[in-house]
Image 1 (tube, helix red, strand yellow):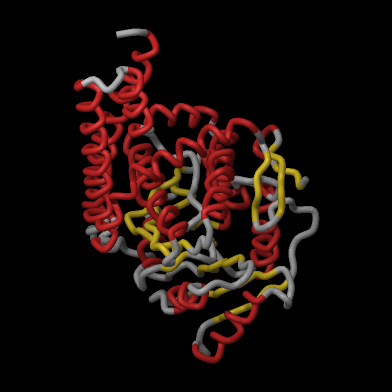
Image 2 (tube, rainbow, N blue to C red):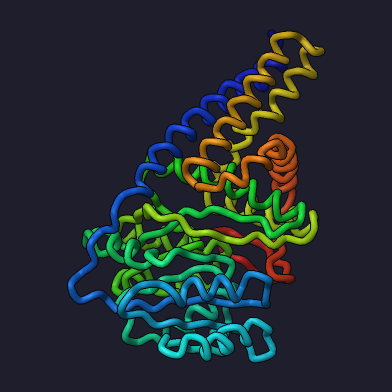
Length: 383
C-alpha cells in the first residue's frame, strides 16, 4: 500500500468506527427519551419563554402555537421583532385572540451596538421579564410537545450544579429538495455527533434549539450582553456558563425544527456558515473530515484503480453509514417517514465534503441577508 492510499484507508476505518460508536450513543439516548418526567418543585419556578423572530414562514404560526399550548402553570411568552414592519410581528399578535389566557408580550426593538441581532432582541426581552426565575430560549423554527417545559424545568432544578439544560433536535423537511438535504444533515450528521460527544465527555456548550438557564446563572455568566457580538451565541453562552462552574445537561426530550430552505444555494450558504462557525469555536472540528466515509471510500477506489478490496471497503462504509442513519431516524427520532429518503445520505455526504473544503478559504459568513467576518475569539463584524 502506498502512502497516498494509507490516508484514505485509515479514514475509512475511522469512519466505520465512528458510525458504529454513534449508533451505540443513539441507542443509549433513545432509552432516555422513554424515562418518566422528573418532578418539578412544589412551587414551580416562573419561566419566561423568549422567542426572537425575523421574517415569517409557512411553519411559524404552528411553531408558536406548540409553545402556547405547553402544559406548565407559571409561564410568560415574549416574542421579539426588530420593528413593526417585520411580518413576523403579525403572528403573535393574531394568536392573542386565540390564546387570551396566555401571557403574551410583543417586544419591539433591539439593543444597540450588537452584531448579533438575535441576541439584540433577547436582551430587550430579558429586560422586560423581571419576574422570571428561568429563561427558556429557542429559535423561531422550533416546535415542542406539551410536556416539554415540565421535563426541562425538572431537569434544570434537579441539581444546583446544573446551570443549563439544552435539547437535541430532529428536523422535518418543508418539501423542497434543499429542505430535505438540510433535514438529512441535522438528523444524520449533526445529531449523531452531539449524542456521541455527550456520551464520552461533559458538555461545554449549548444548542440553540433550546437553552433553559437559571436567572442567577445567566447573570453569573455575564448575561446576554456577554455574547452580543458572537456568531455562535449558543455555544458561548454554554461555554461561559461552564466556566463559572455550572454543568450543562442534554435533556432527555427532543424538539423539532422545520427546514424551509427553498434553493440549493440557500442550503449551501447555511451549511457554509455552520462549518465556519464550528471551525472558529472548536478548531478541532477540522478533524471531522476523517469521518466523511463515502468521500474516502471513493478516493480509495480511484487510487487503487478499482480493486476488489477498495470496492469492498466502499460497500462496508455505505452499509455502516445507512445502518447508523436508519437507527437514528427510527429509534431516536421516531420518524419512520424519513427512512425512504435515506438513499440520499451518501450524496449529501459528498456535498458536505465540498462544504468542508470551501469553509477553509474564508472567515466570511452570510446570515439573514447580511455578511459578517468572524474574527479572533468567535466575535463577528459586519462587512
